[in-house]
Image (cartoon, rainbow, N blue to C red; front, side, top):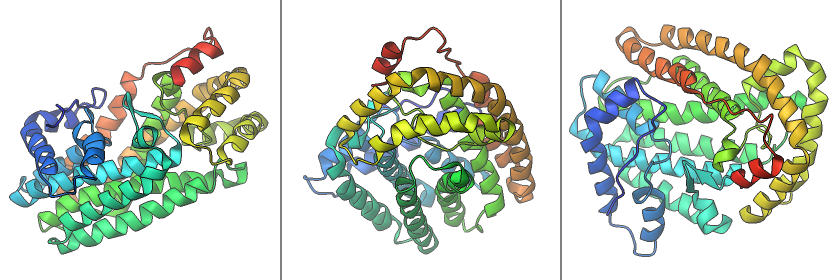
Length: 364
């Protein structure tokens, strides 16, 4: 049995429309995954990560795939047959990303690494990769796109893991790598829909601008809503370089020593390669003793970096549309506006009166 899918409520617009129109196709895709001829040993892990997940990881990817297919002539049997593969690829992305980020929770649910441990991640990633490639082999262009995506994506994940809590002179490179993860993932998803419709690939420049919007919006939401309260990672505490952080430091270089001091506290924990449960405990201890410093940095970034990043998102939106072929520009406008619209639904969390222990208990 597959779990009834819960779709993201904060991303509306085109995503809400596509979800309502094609919910039966998504249910069918999940059933097809359940019926795949995989070993009994592997099934419990696929069941946990995919079939029992009420909100599939990176759920926007299947919706973007369907929206693109719809925009280039309609969803064909080839798109329908490949939809389960898009879902599997999205889950593979989540398994690897959560392991590298040391994330224990995603969408209110244990991550794969938190449930089964670090040692289970490599074989699960290999299994999902094999499943995606097996389902892609009948479509030459899509198969090639999947291989390109996996090789580049895993390389970027390894780079990120080896560059934790970077020094300021590496911030620009770090952010470029962060953007590129989203770019190559989105490129695979959108181009798969185009290739299955016998259409040429989407221009990289357009996808780059779209993904900058998506990543910046996600980073702003992470900062404003303090995801640690929901058990998810906080970017600033995790040493993640974001555009709001960089733009704040460009305006206020005096904040750099504070950021460095905060990350100097977290870096030794990250470099010890602890099991995820131990990592969370040790990180929580660091978070408690640095909570006042963290609140100061967060407040400064929200006041200075977030407004500037929001303006950059608007510029990226215009660039994304400009670099898109005319027949696909209506779709690009909808995709971009759905990300920008998410900012209107940000639920700001004020930590001024929050006790460290309370916030960290909710985060852990």
